[in-house]
Image (cartoon, rainbow, N blue to C red; front, side, top):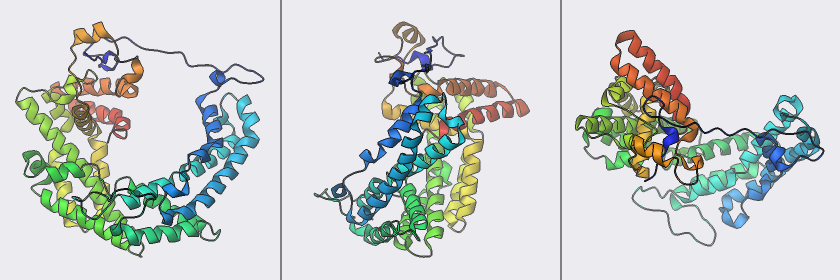
Length: 408
């Protein structure tokens, strides 16, 4: 049986503490890899970042003009790193020197831009315009789908513009925005659950019976964005698409919480309770969630009106902050179910130790302390009332805010 003892909250299970001393760099004329900090190693990796650039035949034709200007830009910043490398290796923390910090930041930015060609290629080759129709079979060289032909031509014009000094910055900014949108525009978090939900009571509750309208709006916003991405209406359509995406993701989480509540109501603990990293009760979940379902229904109504994406984005941001703990628990439950997390008793935790080859195999290990705190706050909030309950909820939300951004 697999055990993850080191992630169980301290208030519910005994766990041993795994601590490993951090390697300390020792002054040396020729620093060895073991004596270099992660920041030193990152600086060295930046020198070789262009090796990850895909060859032209792995990119759609419209994206290929990007390769030369992006590669040249990174080589310039990498040359600065190489020139300053002796000073970096001699400094315990290169990030404390303004000149070194500026060089690293510039090189980090150009290295990130090297991912644009592949990201844009993926975007242009995976959406067919019909969610029921998969992308066409891959060919010797990737080609844009028919539905994205006009957008591909727009990308090509921007890619060519990056090679011209007068237009490079503006064109590159637009390509970065497109690549960022590509991470969710054609496969929004929660979209699959929305389409499969049908008349589920959980989705009816969080959408105020407007699930069908939200699904229709999702398809419409995406289609309009693709059609108008090269026009003056692009910023407005982008905001509209982002608003729908923010809503759909939160509705998925809210439906998950409703499902967990139903499980607790049937004396069947949700999936996340089988994992030793979280210990939650139905009362604790209710204390964390508060009136989230009602607030999500209001967000769904605001989104369905389709006339104020800025207000939708603002309200979605408020909900993420004010319900970070409940949303984190919902996402953990969904992911635990997908991972088929095995049940683990406290006795097994103590007897078997960590899974696999040690702590590196433990899911969510970097967040174990935050999750333990969240569980304690949920337990305390469940037995508190009024202002005291609000204090525990607020603390849980602040604790969970960093966890939430790592969960999709």
